[in-house]
Image (cartoon, rainbow, N blue to C red):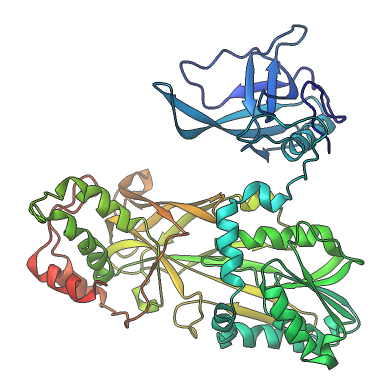
Length: 537
């Protein structure tokens, strides 16, 4: 696609009379009229801009950079536009901040055309540090993966999965590999004589399983350097390999010679959604799968339950005690204690725990891979509601997942639940810096809000509250509430020691914490310091 300064691309289009609402206004934001005319152009550096003008006039009320913008479809006529704008302080550029605008169109086809126009301008125009592009320069459009994922994150991701030692770690997870093998072989009727696409094929093991089940042909798509090893493994199994084609490239970019009857993939990460490969799985469905084709797996469920684990809470809190030293080589570290304390609690804990630590029966949230839209994975909002089985101190939310292989002959579940055979995913726990107290029969409510980001992971926003219990409960109300913000990409892997179980009636012996104020532990007793020191790594 050509990009010439002073000339609009051939797909230029205006959209008259669009109602726009600034959802993040600031005192310096210009007032917006009831209706605007969005148009597109390149700025002086060649970067794409969305320009909002008043209908029937020249000039622009507002110019928005599209370089790091995102669109969210809120309905047939409504689009949410998120843009990043640099902050300016004393003439120096600071970290960027986001602004949100809601755009209301008159017709659905106008909204769809606008969204397509935004993507074309984002993909078709670029700029460099050395200034605008020269006339006649050809700019290769970015694929969907590249436009939403940071290049540095993608590089590390593909490097990691391009190494045999990490593939071996997954292959030796016999719960994972054995369940996939059983799901495929026990459902030969689904694979016999069918075209299969292996999404993110890795070593190619799932492609070989599909060939064993009688697949007519398997296209193994792998973007990392592991594609070379997959080709060698396929070539080393000629009776199966003659029906397997390894394709090196991203699912969002490659072209296949035919549609697939079945997709097979292992797109699950920690908490099911980490690494954001589920989005690639859905894109593969939309690009390659025939109508009513099968997906292995076809759906996933995130399971959640409140838990109580005094040892874990003390272990995490004690990590920050380092920052309570008032003379560390003559330096007072205490100004950083509060930040360090919250930082440790911002790490989800990945380990295998005793299911007796759960305070109530779990609930679950379903993601149906056969029907979910890619955009629905950008933000996942899960309401929480539990009834406490025991009276205790709730330290946070425990999570795990399972996926279903909905074969025509046999249905198979792959689960990562506590108490089940351990997998390389383990389980995940979000620990609150301020626990809440509950009585048996008391209602626990809250919200688990997952927001995707460009580092191929999610920010976790957790709120848990204990509702009024006993006399007067019918009037509702919240007795206590605790919140936490955690980064799924930066977990605390707590895997090298057995996890203790404390009966509920004994947990009071371990609750020696001085009352907590403002989300920080002001001090810990000597007994807990000793426990934490033994457990801290």
